[in-house]
Image (cartoon, rainbow, N blue to C red; front, side, top):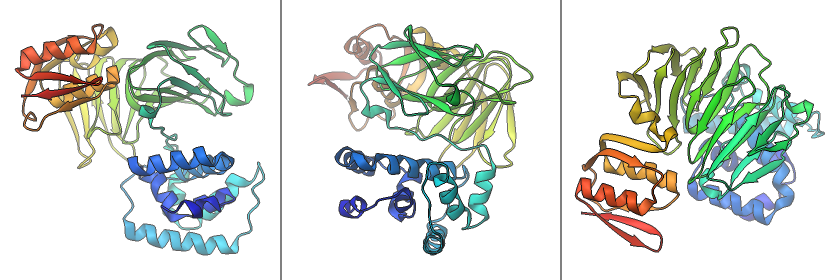
Amino acid sequence: METEKFINYQTTEDFILDKEFSYWVLHPDVEIDLFWESFINDHPEKKTQFRDAILIIKSLQPIQQEVPQEKLDVIFQKVQLAGKKIKFNWNVGLKYAAAIAILISVGSLIYLSFQTKNQFPIEVASEMFLKGKVILADGTTREFDTEQTTIVNNTTGNLSINSDTINVSSEQTTSTLIQVIIPYGKRSEITLADGTHIWLNSGSQLSYPSKFESSSREVFLSGEAFFEVKANHDQPFYVITREVKIKVLGTSFNVSSYVEDNTVQTVLLKGKVTAGKNKLFASTIELIPGERLTYDKNNSNLLKDKVDVQLYSSWVKGYLVFRNIPITEVFTKLERYYNRQISVEDGLGKTTFSGKLDLGENLKTVLTNIAFAASVNVEENNGSFIIKK
C-alpha cells in the first residue's frame, strides 16, 4: 500500500472513499493491520479521521453474506461520483450525517444495514497488547496488568477495575459502549450493572453499555466468555458475535467466537437460549441444557448436538478438560491462556488428547503432562515450545 497517498488525506471523507482502506476495514488482514498500526504511530495527527472513518464504515456494514468483489467495484464507483457532487461539512454535529448520506446513496444494501441494530463494534487485535484495556466512549483508556482482573459496573453507570473507580460521564451511560480488551495470557471477571456475571477469556473483547435502558440488553463478544445472566423477562439479554446472535432470559452458557477459529460455539449449562445467524430474517434454534450450537464459518451451516458441558466451561474454574480432541486445538487454547508460542511439527494433525490440565501450573509442566499422555516430545527454545513426534 502507498503510504504517501494516505499522508495527503486531510478528512474522514478521504479515508471513507478510498477503496483499499474500506476493503481493509471490512476484510481485516494481519499484514495490512501492521501497515495501518505503523501508519498511525508515524502520523498521530490523522488518528481522529482514521478512527471516525472506521466507525462509519463498520456501523453501516450489513452482517450478512460477503458482498461480491464485482458489486464492491460498482458501489465504489457510485460513491466516488456522489462524493464529487456533495459538499461536506465535517463539523462535530454533521460529520457522521454527511458520510452516511453518501454511503446510503449507493442503494438498498447499505440502507438495510443502517436500519438494523446489528452494528458490530470495532474489533482490535488483542494479541498486540501486553496489558488489558478498558476504553470508554470518549476515548478514555485505563490499562491493567493483572492476570485475573475484576471489573464491576454499578447501577449509577460508573465502574471499577480491581477496586479503582472510574467515573463515567452521564452522556456515556445510555447509548454508548464500554469496550474491554483482554490480551492473551490474562482473563477478567466482569459484573454488569444488571447483575449479570461474565468471565472473559484470554484474547477476547467485550463491548456493552454502562446501563441497560432500552427494551433489551445487548453485549458484543469477540473471543470466548462464560455468562451467568441475571433473569429479566421484560428485558431479554443478547450476546452478539459477528456471525451468531444469542437470546437469553436468565441462564448460564459459554460462547467461543475467536476471529481465527473456523467455528462459533454456544454451549448451554442451565436455562434456555435461542440462537441463530446474525443476519436479517434469520431463523433461530432453541437450546436446552447439555446442548451445543456450532456455526461453521466455511459453509455458514448451524449444527446442534449434545455435549459434556464440563469440556467447555471448566476454564472458568482454572482447568481444561479434553476428550479425544486434536492436539493442535489443545495447544491453541494453551497459547491463548499462557500467551506463549507453541509450534507443532507436521504429521501430528491426527494425534488426539484426553485429560484434565491444571491451569495453575506453569506451561512447561502442562506440556510435559500432555507429552506423556499423547506420546510426543516437547522442546523449549527461547521461551517458545516445539512439539515433535
